[in-house]
Image 1 (cartoon, rainbow, N blue to C red):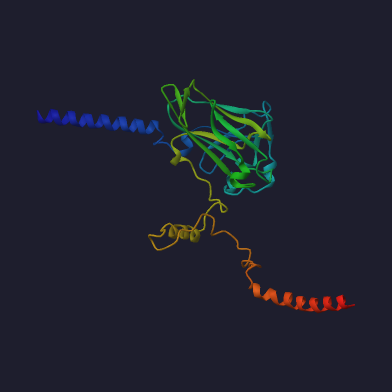
Image 2 (cartoon, rainbow, N blue to C red):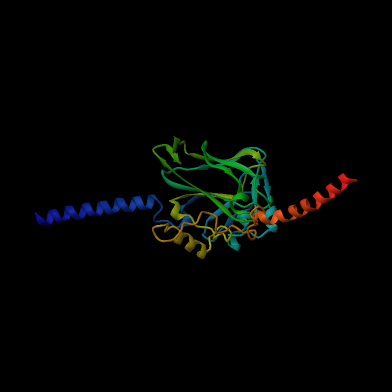
Length: 286
């Protein structure tokens, strides 16, 4: 009896472990990063394999929709490895809304990664557009220059999931028919564009991060000052208002011109009055 019970327990444990392994494999846990990517394209450019082994295919919209540009090839792209700068140096743009269709056959958690770099405009509010995912606006008023500046890599990362024929993204749900449509929506400022994009199975933690942006990183000393200022009156330190540390003083305070002693102004008045009376007396006698 004990032997039968032990066999049943062992069989149950084996079944549970097998189910867990299958679920882990289905979620991408047993796959490499490159194997989790189900679709990738180098927009406006040729095929490319990046440092993570992701194979970006040649742009399928070439000769069909929009315009390809390699204007960024003359510029080095900050935050990107030298081997993968090509993904940010080429782009596809269009004078109207355009996009790509990505076939997805399995349910699960997915990530859409869109790569951008502003290589033409040198100020914000020159190119601003939205991004839609099956009709859901997932990126609103994207201004690449305002986000990171000129010739600098920027990734927009959008997680979504597909369960029981439903697409869920950013709290919104819609029916999913096996095709993911990524659209770059024409706005009021210039034309929408994209440099490269890919769809992978996994979570946000699985997405490779770009190199730190030197202009957006806070110095360690500034972070320490902010931590110290949080003590407030209870900690014996006065809280420093936001932005006050970076304020540039224009010089010493201008003295109040009306703060001088009024008695110093009476002397010239008395002298003038003393001169005026005798003069008036002499004129009257004449």
